[in-house]
Amino acid sequence: MTESSGSSDLWNLTLQHSPIGMALVAPDGRLLMANPALAGMLGYDVDELTSRGFQEITHPEDLAADLGLVARTLEGEIDSFRLRKRYLHAQGQVIWGDLSAALVRSRDGTPLHFISQILDVTDQHQQEERLRRANADLERERQALEAIFETVGVGLLLIGPDGRYERMNRRHEETMRLPFPDGHDGHAGQLGHVYGLDGTTPLTKEEMPSQRAAMGEEFDDYAYWAGEDPLTRTAFSTSARQLRSASGQRLGAALAYQDITDLMRAIQVKDQFVASVSHELRTPLTSVLGYLEILGSRNDLPAQVVRQLRVVQRNALRLEALVTDLLHVGQADEGSLPLRRGPADLASLTRHAVEAVAAVAEEAGVSLEVDVPDRLDTVVDEQRMRQVVDNLLSNAVKYTLRDGSVTVALSEDDGTVRLTVSDTGIGIARDEVDQVFDRFFRGHEARDRHIPGTGLGLDIVSSIVAAHDGEVTLESRLGTGSTFRVSLPLTKG
Image (tube, rainbow, N blue to C red; front, top):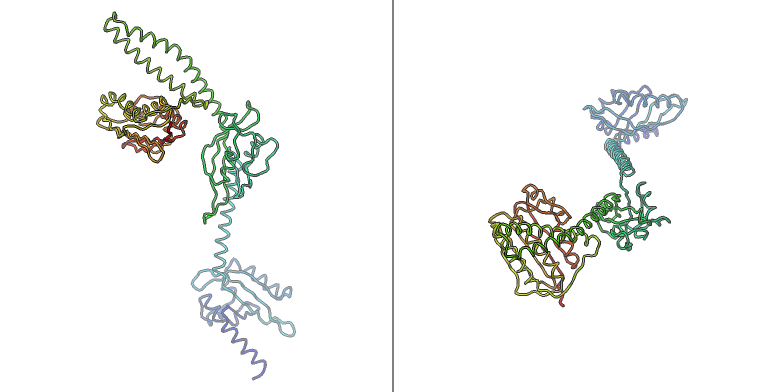
């Protein structure tokens, strides 16, 4: 065997057993030789494949680029080329191949054939195409979020896990000068001209919304005032959400700041008006009630006049109760709700409240069930706590239909006093439960049934309980009933 024939045999073995598609291609495009790997990749047998030219198995849209490189190689501009192109499979589908081709010439430079190597990259190309589309979608999403981030009418702030400010939109950047006229160091918790809802008490570092968010809190509608000048201060409502990775790792927090100055000013004007009117009404009402009491004590009045005076007195007392409620609301807003704490027996107080509402409950066809200990001593404002029990009981009876029931329970557990008032009444819709302690709020069921009320009772209950460092909660289901729970710290005096 000559050295030349040995090289030829070696080449044939390499060609036949290579896992990569290989072929010898004539300058005119005819396939002189193809290995099984290439034939299998394109769905032909070897003989059938070598009866074709590469032009026949190349996708029409890629043929011009392939022919151009072949021409440049034959002209001697380049010795080899590489091209990713599409091939046509025998079954009609498209195969993506990575083609590497080198031209072999004779000693005198005459082109003999191309040695071509084709790697099937269909899966890789499809992956790349999916990645490209995903990147395009992400870019569109990024641009949309960027547009929203910069055009929304609220200030937006992103805080990193270390509390550093990572990004804010123009809206927030503009408002930063209000609380921080001398500049900001870009870290959560920096103190500035930021005040509580009273407009005078500066927020501590722990109360700053950025610090709360940096410490992992999530909250909604956290309101405060910002600005050095009390006359030009701006009120903001801030909400915060934590940012986490898919694995749950904390990445930081996002905060949204909304200007609510107009709303807060309007509320202040309304509350001042209500307080002013309430004060103005109390003096003449006191006089009216006093004279009604004097008239009621006379024995020389006709029975019809006495009945009429009782109607007037009943309605005057109702008006006085409303004025008292409005004054109470004004005191709570000013942060000056007066408490006269002293020793009190809550068990006796609760029983008396039940006795007071018993006649109304009997007339409405509502039964009262009482589970109260013989005695439960603590230190509270007895008159204010009577307001709490009275309001909860009157509400329960008012919103319970005939043949329903109201249950009152009082107990002490591990240093905590617990008062529970449950009813089998009309209940409260799920989307309204969080609003029942809001001032002037009345549920749609109460409005639809024309049940009288001002929407102040539960607001008063909430403020009195809060002033005693307690908590009031509600569980309710529409059409089933409601349960109010009051928890107070037990104080021995």
